[in-house]
Length: 104
Ligand SMILES: [Zn+2]
Image (tube, rainbow, N blue to C red):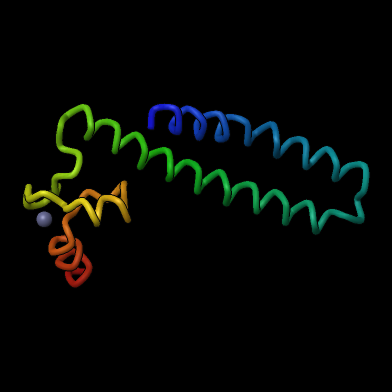
Protein backbone atom coordinates (compact mmCIF):
# COMPACT_ATOMS: atom_id res chain seq x y z
CA UNK A 1 0.00 0.00 0.00
CA UNK A 2 2.81 2.40 0.97
CA UNK A 3 4.65 1.40 -2.19
CA UNK A 4 1.57 2.12 -4.28
CA UNK A 5 1.45 5.66 -2.88
CA UNK A 6 5.12 6.15 -3.79
CA UNK A 7 4.58 4.80 -7.28
CA UNK A 8 1.67 7.19 -7.84
CA UNK A 9 3.72 10.06 -6.43
CA UNK A 10 6.51 9.34 -8.94
CA UNK A 11 3.97 9.33 -11.75
CA UNK A 12 2.51 12.67 -10.66
CA UNK A 13 5.99 14.21 -10.32
CA UNK A 14 6.99 12.88 -13.74
CA UNK A 15 3.92 14.34 -15.45
CA UNK A 16 5.36 17.87 -15.78
CA UNK A 17 8.45 16.61 -17.61
CA UNK A 18 6.31 14.33 -19.74
CA UNK A 19 4.13 17.29 -20.77
CA UNK A 20 7.23 19.31 -21.72
CA UNK A 21 8.47 16.42 -23.82
CA UNK A 22 5.15 16.22 -25.66
CA UNK A 23 5.20 19.99 -26.25
CA UNK A 24 8.80 19.83 -27.51
CA UNK A 25 7.69 17.28 -30.11
CA UNK A 26 5.06 19.81 -31.14
CA UNK A 27 7.78 22.31 -32.17
CA UNK A 28 9.28 19.72 -34.51
CA UNK A 29 5.98 19.09 -36.21
CA UNK A 30 3.61 22.04 -36.03
CA UNK A 31 1.08 20.27 -38.25
CA UNK A 32 0.65 17.81 -35.45
CA UNK A 33 -0.39 20.46 -32.92
CA UNK A 34 -3.92 19.07 -32.60
CA UNK A 35 -2.77 15.63 -31.64
CA UNK A 36 -0.20 17.12 -29.25
CA UNK A 37 -2.99 19.02 -27.49
CA UNK A 38 -4.86 15.77 -27.30
CA UNK A 39 -1.83 13.97 -25.85
CA UNK A 40 -1.36 16.74 -23.25
CA UNK A 41 -5.03 16.55 -22.33
CA UNK A 42 -4.84 12.78 -21.97
CA UNK A 43 -1.71 13.09 -19.83
CA UNK A 44 -3.41 15.65 -17.57
CA UNK A 45 -6.47 13.45 -17.16
CA UNK A 46 -4.19 10.55 -16.29
CA UNK A 47 -2.27 12.69 -13.78
CA UNK A 48 -5.50 13.85 -12.19
CA UNK A 49 -6.64 10.23 -11.87
CA UNK A 50 -3.27 9.29 -10.35
CA UNK A 51 -3.61 12.14 -7.83
CA UNK A 52 -7.08 11.01 -6.82
CA UNK A 53 -5.87 7.44 -6.54
CA UNK A 54 -2.93 8.58 -4.43
CA UNK A 55 -5.21 10.53 -2.09
CA UNK A 56 -7.33 7.44 -1.63
CA UNK A 57 -4.26 5.31 -0.96
CA UNK A 58 -2.95 7.86 1.56
CA UNK A 59 -6.36 8.09 3.24
CA UNK A 60 -6.45 4.31 3.45
CA UNK A 61 -2.93 4.29 4.94
CA UNK A 62 -3.85 6.82 7.61
CA UNK A 63 -6.99 4.84 8.47
CA UNK A 64 -4.86 1.70 8.74
CA UNK A 65 -2.54 3.57 11.13
CA UNK A 66 -5.47 4.90 13.17
CA UNK A 67 -7.04 1.46 13.26
CA UNK A 68 -10.22 2.76 11.61
CA UNK A 69 -9.68 0.86 8.37
CA UNK A 70 -12.70 -1.29 7.54
CA UNK A 71 -14.86 0.74 9.92
CA UNK A 72 -17.57 3.05 8.58
CA UNK A 73 -16.55 6.72 8.92
CA UNK A 74 -20.17 7.73 9.46
CA UNK A 75 -21.74 5.16 11.81
CA UNK A 76 -18.69 3.25 13.06
CA UNK A 77 -20.04 -0.14 12.01
CA UNK A 78 -17.72 -2.66 10.33
CA UNK A 79 -17.91 -2.15 6.56
CA UNK A 80 -17.81 -5.87 5.79
CA UNK A 81 -15.17 -8.01 4.19
CA UNK A 82 -16.96 -8.41 0.88
CA UNK A 83 -17.44 -4.67 0.44
CA UNK A 84 -13.82 -3.95 1.46
CA UNK A 85 -12.60 -6.51 -1.06
CA UNK A 86 -14.67 -4.93 -3.82
CA UNK A 87 -13.93 -1.32 -2.79
CA UNK A 88 -10.71 -1.26 -0.73
CA UNK A 89 -10.73 2.56 -0.47
CA UNK A 90 -14.30 2.92 0.71
CA UNK A 91 -14.89 4.65 4.06
CA UNK A 92 -18.61 4.08 4.39
CA UNK A 93 -20.71 0.97 4.99
CA UNK A 94 -23.29 0.22 2.34
CA UNK A 95 -26.18 1.68 4.37
CA UNK A 96 -24.35 5.01 4.88
CA UNK A 97 -23.19 5.07 1.26
CA UNK A 98 -26.84 4.74 0.17
CA UNK A 99 -27.94 7.39 2.68
CA UNK A 100 -25.29 9.82 1.32
CA UNK A 101 -26.28 9.09 -2.26
CA UNK A 102 -29.96 9.72 -1.61
CA UNK A 103 -29.08 12.91 0.33
CA UNK A 104 -27.37 14.00 -2.89
ZN1 LIG B 1 -22.19 3.35 8.21
